[in-house]
Image (cartoon, rainbow, N blue to C red; front, side):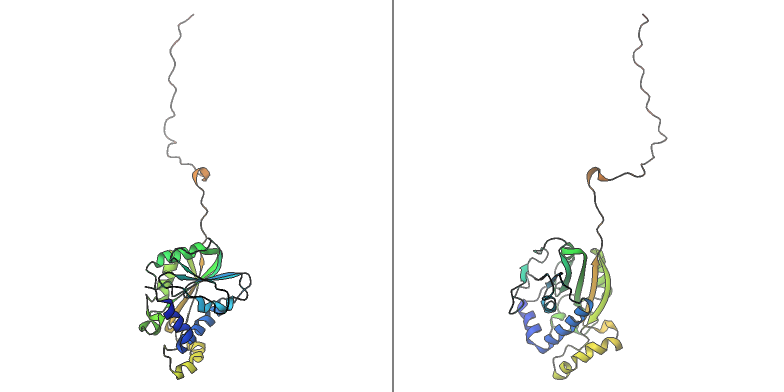
Length: 254
């Protein structure tokens, strides 16, 4: 079940913990995907907190927000680029997206397989997908005080296997949100320390979210009708006798 867009907005933009979580995930996203000019960047679910750095250089940025969640105008103070859409029917042409981020879109969906199929449809042949989901082994998925405590948390192996089943090749797996999900002053003052150093002293499984970057597998060319070429014809009938024409009626001698 999707969270309400107002709850997501309030967490990420109006709480200290939400702003710290936004920065931690966004910094890791930028480390994986530095902004490049001329690209089409899209986010599904509630991925807009991660997309602002791409606005100046991207050819187009789109925030896709599913109907059960609701939509809000974004970005603030600029022309709106967010759109309300069906969860499995996005208003984008096929093969048009260079970078696609899924956050709060897969683990809360009632039909995650269809979401990944739609992601594969809109992603270009050389495009990349970044899926961000709650880590089932992390602290952030163990309570309902943050958006990461809702929906189905994943392990890295589960997410990678699901991506493979839907035509994606996992390229890189990482994590973020190493700080505890606490909004106290001490934790907020030390949030950057946790994100910068904890990944080196703790296993990546301790992060609050798993981030898997994937590419789309090449689609095999298809040719319908008589387009197929038979390179090695079957020889199962080679031993069969050839039919012999029956002789015609005998002619009387003249």
